[in-house]
Image (tube, rainbow, N blue to C red):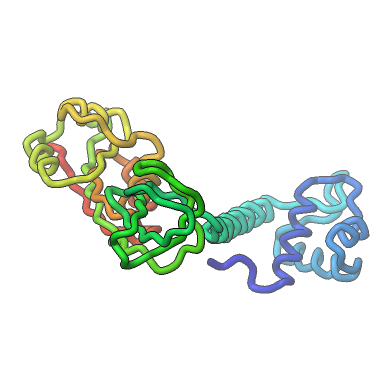
Length: 263
C-alpha cells in the first residue's frame, strides 16, 4: 500500500492539511512551529503546492486557500493513511500475550495443551499433540473458556469457499422472480453457515424456513467464517453483493456467484 513516496511528500500533506483549516491569518511561521521545520521549508513547499494547483495565494481575506483539487488530494491521502494505520493496528493486535479457547477437557495451570479449530471455534486439549500448542494459565473445567499463554506452532486452517446467491432487487421483482427450484438445489449442498444481505434475501430464507446465522455486517462475517474453515452460503440482493465480493477478494477467499433470477 503506497502512502507517501518520501518524507517530503508527507510534509506537503501536513502543510496542505493545515491550510485546509482555512485560518485567515495563517502564517508560514505558525506552520513551521507546528511541524517542527524551518520557515524556508514551509515557503518552498507552499510554492510547490501553488504550482501544482493545490493552493491559491492572496485570495479574498485568506493568505492561503486550498483549492478543490487540493481538497481532493487531502481526502485521498487521509483515507490512504487511515487504511495503512488500521492495517498496522490490526497486525499489532495479533501480538497478544494471552489467548482464549474453549477447554475440551478439564485443564490445569501449567499444562501444555494443543489447539484445534472445530466449527469455527478454538478448542484446547491434551490429546492432539500436533500443530499449535500453548500453556494453561489458570485451571478451567471442560466447556469453560481457558486462558492460554506461550503460544507456539500454527493452527492448520484451510479457508473454505463461499457461494453467493444473487437475488434481484425489489425494483426487478425481488424474491418473487427467483427460481426457487434452483435455490433449493443450491441450498441442499453442505454449508456450515448461512448469511443474508438485504430484505429480499431474508424473504428467501423465510421461504426456506431457515434462520440465517448472520444478517448484519454480513460481508465481514462471511469472510471471517470462511477464513476459519467454514463453508458459507450467502443470499445477497443486487448490488449489495459487491460488498461481499470486495471483502472476499481482499482476504483471497474463493467464491462463486449464482444468479437465480428466472429467465
